[in-house]
Image (cartoon, rainbow, N blue to C red):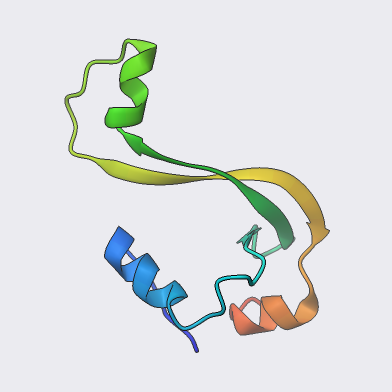
Length: 85
């Protein structure tokens, strides 16, 4: 299953709904030098930023923060993402 360009939380939920919930989750980054990272945090601004004293002025945005670098992205994952040469 391939889902391109999820732009909203609903799109992301739809993209993930076809997979086993126990499947490990990673973030792929840097197409030219592909690495894989764990997902560190999921936050929403401005709600989650209020504890920092930041005044909410913008519409809500959900952020997926990258965590620890796991290693190089496997070639099969780079191929599935369309990053292969």
